[in-house]
Each structure stands twice: as C-alpha cells, then as structure tokens.
Length: 151
Length: 135
Image (cartoon, rainbow over all chains, first blue to last red):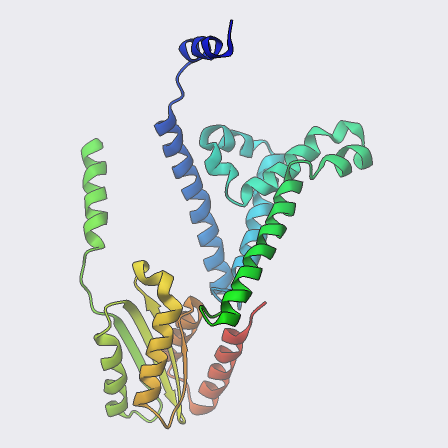
C-alpha cells in the first residue's frame, strides 16, 4: 500500500473533525478566560494603586496561579477537553503546562522527577517568549531611534 | 430560545450604534465657568472620545479621557492631540493629559468629593505620581 492510498483510507475511515464547532468552543472558552482576566485587572486597578498599564503584571501572575490551582484540582483538564486551544493559548495554558508536567513526574522523585520535568512543556514557551521579546524590542528600538514610532 | 438569542444579539449590536456625545465632568476650584466651557468644547467636537474629566487648580489642569472602543488602538495619539489642543487653549496652565482608566476613575472620585485646595493639591500630586509609575 503506497502512502497516498493509505492516507486516503485513513481519511475515509477516520471520523470527521467538527472544525467549526471546535473553533466556536475555543472562542467561547478563550473569551471567558480573557473576561476573567479583564475583571481581575479591574479589581487591581480599583482596589489597589495600579494603572491600566501596570495592572497587567499582577493580572498575569494571578491568572497563572489560578490555572495552576485548577490543574491541581483536575478542573483545568475538563476545561481543556471542552475548549481545546481556547484554554491552551491564553497565559493560563502556561500554568497548566507547568503543573501537569510536575504532577505527571511526581512519582520519579522531587529532584529528578518534578524538578527536571516541570519545564519540559513550558520551557520552550520561556525560551521562545524571551527570544521573540528580544527581537521585537530590538526592532522597536531601531524604529524609535529612526523616529518612525514613539515608545 | 433561538429567537431570544438573535434578538439580544441584535440589540447588543444596535446599542453600539448609539451616537452619544462624550460624558464630560469638570471641576474648577475658582469656579471659572468660562474656562470650564472652553475645555468642554474641546471634547464635544471629538467623536472618538467617550468620556472626559478635568480638574482646574492653581494654574494646573489635569485631564483624563476614555476613547471609543474602536479608537483604542490610537489612544496615545488621541491623548497627545488633545494635550496639544488643551495646551494651546490654556497656555498659562500646566497641562497633564492621561488616557489611563485608573486616572479617569481617580479624577472622577476627586470631582465627586469637590475637596478643599490643600486636599486637592495632595490628591493631584498622588495622581501624577501614579501616572508616572512604570513598574
């Protein structure tokens, strides 16, 4: 059986993915997560002395912390099964990736299990996040120096 | 249920089409209505602004504004153009313009309280320090 006909058979037998339905579910889940984030940033602005610009840092930290707790209690798994990318793309997905890897490798010990594997999934996020932030800042610095945009 | 959903969606969409003038609230310590009206005029003609507040105090003018949702991307630009306009209108005032939501909330609180001069000076200094905070 050549690869093409094999792929054809797979396509025929495999159940069709409800792409539109999945997109809609991801949209709603991601939207709800972002609304909660917006609400938290309003709380930080209203009750503490954070401005619109500075409130984003504690909001991100809080969202990650909440998702870590939800992952520990097994609730984020259910949200992920329903929302798919809608729950993985926001920053809460980062918290989930860290804690789920930690839980999975707990049986291998705290150092060689949890410590080594905790950032197995989240590590690339940190590496490429830092690298892309560096590239974007470099481009922005050049554009600011050239007078195209302002900070 | 479907009809109800459709109706609420349409109402929500149409609510965005309302053509309301910006809500402007201004407090002048010396109650100079001429200056208040001059500042109000700046906001009334601007369709991109949804809300504006201002406080006049001892040749100082603190203004905060909120822009319409679709203009949020050019918030800084709108704030800068308003700042220029206000500075040209009140050349003898030290003008400070912010488009931050927190500054708008705090300024509205000040306007509601209508504090005495000493308290107002303290409040406005705190507000400026807050706006400068970058961390």
